[in-house]
Length: 142
Image 1: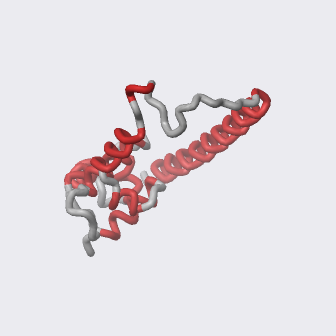
Image 2: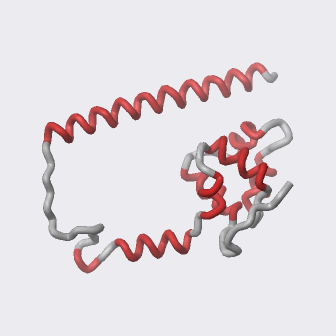
């Protein structure tokens, strides 16, 4: 088992916890996906580690469906600086161009919203199928 090399200020376990929570995945669900030797307590201990073994990090990132580099390289301080430097509170908190030029075609917007709704339904169906597979594995394992 090799440790990853990254910025010493980056805490990979804390980053893993942040991404897991953002995705709404509980520790026990992640443990179940990792296999029989894992449990909620082991996930909790993993999230407390500053460095995570590369092979474990790869498995977890595959389960969370995010690149392992995102966990390795996420730096909260840099993200906060980017956000702080992007917004200008004195001028009504805008991003980029403050001219206020908006060209919105209502028909195009309706089509875009419809396409987004279809994509959302497709993602929801895919997640439902994945959850059913997990439940079938869980029930079949008993």
